[in-house]
Image (cartoon, rainbow, N blue to C red; front, side, top):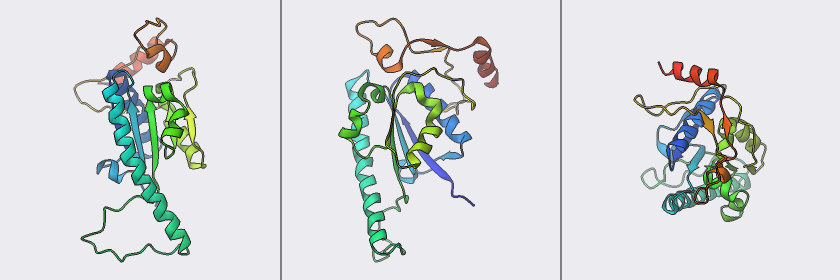
Length: 218
């Protein structure tokens, strides 16, 4: 049997980000991924879905990402040591009581959302451990983008695209509330607002698609 693929997805910011995270979770579930039951420590893919409206939210993301980048360096160092030793079993010299929690054999870091759109490839220079930087309009392509990462690429997906209707329904995080998009992006370009720049031009969903999603809520 193939091992279960575990993902940890953390959302920073507004209801639009929550809706994007639910879309990503639905697409990943359709592709065979499951949510980590032990948080970030038990995941082989960590996704931070980010907000760039408030500086505090942005700094929280960088703080969390720095911690996971350090953890990824430990994973890569362990893989190199194993390869240098001839690919055999990893050392068991540390006692069970002093050994750290077992790390996944691989770890991929994803920064999604508005900070991804805003910073783009510059994020790879700031945090070279990142595997994928993506804008919110690529949310339903997350599984496809991770497949590209599996080929050994660092992927930046922030270019404007026409948002396609999701094959998978969002994986709701609440039994009481549900965010349903009527449109994506905005054309107003208000001086104080970053939405047109980070979320792209306005794109409206078809009424039948909105209705289908509403009816799926039960």
